[in-house]
Image 1 (cartoon, rainbow, N blue to C red):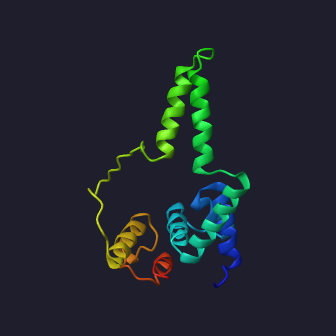
Image 2 (cartoon, rainbow, N blue to C red):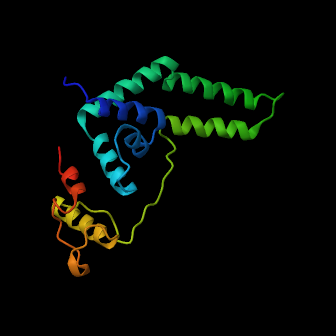
Image 3 (cartoon, helix red, strand yellow):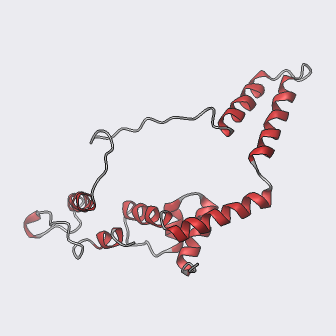
Length: 169
């Protein structure tokens, strides 16, 4: 397997530490001239990179093993907490409910749902050219890359370096 670059490795380590891809990107790469949206795009792109995904899986497995955290061990802890909370001498029904909910979430029986909406309506697949054109439009509205006369230029990769990065494999 090809090795990660030093910056990719730094990104992986920072991501496992913080759980925040954008923060990991800021720590590993020079993002001082980038907007938060551009950082987010680049961080997301890195998370989809196969070598980075494999490295993150490996780092997580090492951390999990280091702490010996498994679904079985967590299940045991939650069952113990439930039993203690239900003990007549303790009488802690709120703790019992919390343990029961924890068990349900751990085993996928209870899923926290979030309703996400946008001005554009439901999500749909977007082609690369549509994405680039929309990004160019948004950057133009922010005042980045406006052509003479205030017009927004087309989604030209030379005009918008971020588009070059979006199209890299």
